[in-house]
Amino acid sequence: MNEMRKSPVADQSAWKAADIRDHNEQWAHTLSDENIREIEAALEHANSKDLKCEEITKEDFPLPTVQTLLKKILAQVHDGFGFCSVTGLPGENYTEDDSAKIFWGLGTYLGTAKSQNSHGHLVGHVVDMGGRLGEDRVRGYQTNQTLKFHTDRADMSALYCFQPAPKGGTTKVASSMAIHDTIMQTQPELLEHLYFGYPFMHMEEKGHAEPVRIPVYSVADNYLSCTLQADPVEKAIREQIMPVSEEAKKALALFHELACKPEFHLDFDLRKGDMLFNNNFTMLHCRTAFEDDPDPAKRRHLFRLWLAFDEPRPTAINFANYGGIKKEA
Image 1 (cartoon, rainbow, N blue to C red):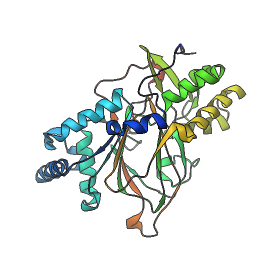
Image 2 (cartoon, one colour):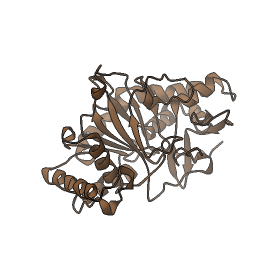
Image 3 (cartoon, helix red, strand yellow):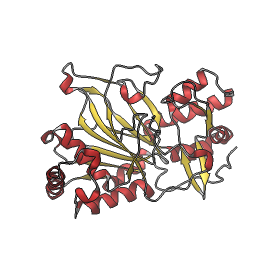
Image 4 (cartoon, helix red, strand yellow):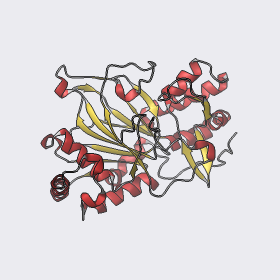
């Protein structure tokens, strides 16, 4: 089993909702009119070069003053509370293609994009494709179902709301560090199961991939990190591909129970143009079920980026689950 942390995290990343609401000036940012004009000028510059979205580099998307804000956002996500929201962009003014370019252009200042599926897509489209969780190769972001608290397979996850759902689809963010500290203080005997880990199978793999055991928590160089792809793990437990004790199941249930308590998470009802950035090592996120508009042009549609930090977080060797999803040949 991994070496367990001996003391609580007890830094900014181990927040509870009541604590963090008093500091929203650090994690909730509203773009100014000047910011918006600069972003639109950068978009115009990129379009003048006839570049496709994923061809745009930082140099193609010049943000002389907005980059200062992006540095603050990156610092907060990397070393602070672990997440940031950005509002104020008039998303209704932009086409789908231009919205994706704006989001991608901002992302070039925050990290390196990683593949989000076996097709090698760097810009993910979070839309209901009619699939259901548990079906072969169906991912949660392709459904309209509730998604349990989880992490993504990249250092940072970023969302941009192109079109909200008429009902539902709330995104929630919780601190996995606060959950760790609470379990350590209240039921420490269960914590060892979260360090030992749970079976996992990559849902994108064709055929029968070999299952692996991945810890929920791990420590490297005194940095505590968390990872949990909830649906693949629960599917692996149901199919009994590796032995999981009742105490281990109890520990995982407690982990989810705490995340779902209002005191442990914040809710975000993203509107057109809103963005949300979070650190997958220290934060969890989930989504409530939603109902789409009958008009296909008005269905819920978010863009997603998976970004690698330029300054990597130290992680244990058995915790290397953050490099995105390998593109199939």
